[in-house]
Length: 359
Image 1 (tube, rainbow, N blue to C red):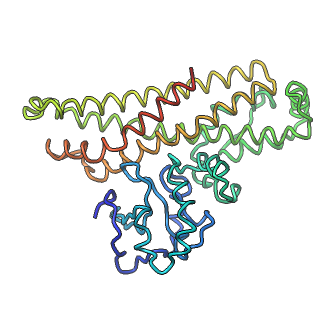
Image 2: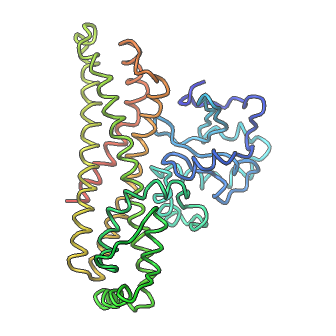
């Protein structure tokens, strides 16, 4: 059974539905685009909160009963979940509206989930359950510097400030310890029309806003070379005589390459727009300019998360199925047809909607 094949099959020996996940499993869930650990969701069905809601390669939302070390995964569509929890029909009936609502969220990254949980009125402890892991925050340091350097310069001027990870950046922002820094903060307070006592909260908000951008930028930087490698993997098909004479297959391949290229270009353009808006804010600091910047970032979370989630799960499966980038023409063509094409329309539509928002 592959990681893309939904199944209501029983878990293998030792893998019981609802079994606690190990630390590595939890860390993966915390930072992933496609995984929602149900332990953070208020549900009544016993055992269900120990499982995961995931986006599979076709971008369907399913319950994952288990996943083994060889990446094989037992996945259950929501509509057949009753076959797994037959003894808890009433509890599951009460939980289904929550699960179905969550299934409409295009990505399960912590930032998209924060917005979705608020909109869906699902109570969750954001400070505890919707935060990136410490290891991921450290990993994002370089991405974060690009967004926070203007702020640190604004507060500390030309002073050399040592920054080793994201937590250092956020601590410097929230707890300046120099007279000159406090003077600059007072000036910023006046420009923003925010009381000095509220500046730490503003700075924390700023830091979290740009941490989200750093996270998505990191996801983009990770997936771009994978997409390029995948497109290169498709090139031999263009020279295959059988495919050359198969109009539908040629059209399918052209459409996939066009979609992947267009989405990557559009995403990259969005980040360039964020950089320009951020630079504009520091040229003329005021409350309205930051509010506009924050709203722009937050309004993009859903589409950025959804697009990157879709690309990531597809590229992950490609690497798992073809770890040496091999495979004959028929296998490659069938993989594109069965695993890449399904769900691409969702990715295209999310990015198209986001492009319209930028105009």
